[in-house]
Length: 300
Image 1: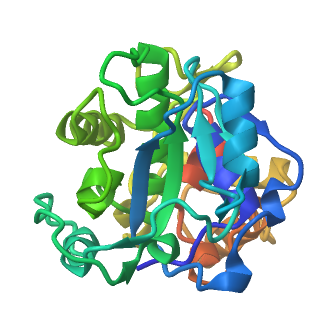
Image 2: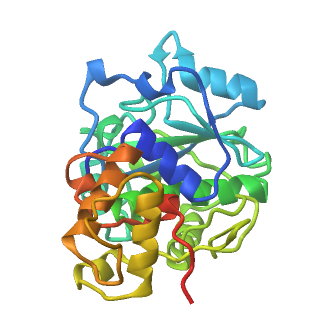
């Protein structure tokens, strides 16, 4: 289980994955929190919209319908791969689903039972992405869109330390739904797993490479959360420290230097809070999303 990301942290995670993101007015506080709990969160749910036309789809997912108020998801993924953010918090996207499926997602088993009953509140436990598609099995899924679905899912998995097993389709949550249609969730999870293994990228979402780079040169790949807990001595730590100083998050009296210290951790905690993280998500131990956002230069 995890504390839901703040709006700032969600935006940073998506952008760190190289996605093109459009923020729609008021999305940061647009939610259904007054109607039920939001969090702890356990995964990501993928849907198709049964609509065409990005503008109309985004408007529907933001406002909802008379019988189902919006937001109907957190982000709409358009045909061109753009992620349109329409909500932050509880959204009317998942509904009631199978508690056994939820248990499998929580345990990240990788194999889900067939949904046969209801009772678990998916709007509490899942982020939701609605993908622009008619859902008739004939409407195509452009590679740019599938790539964006992969990256958006990977962004949240990285932010929370989840595996690809934490991403499910609506049809895997309840037998009352058929979405998404047009690709298998197994194939999507395989793409997400490959993406997580390759590392985040700040390159365009239309590209397939996993290496991180900017116009100024290559960025240092995330060394892994466990690496920092071993108190490493490395040029990577120095490079990280210099970036913390550059973004106004220094906690150093001297340095930074190559030896990981509590000053590094304190500075990194300031960076996490600057991104919008709080609580245990801002404890100073680097995570992949915040690392990608920091843009640490590659060390030779």
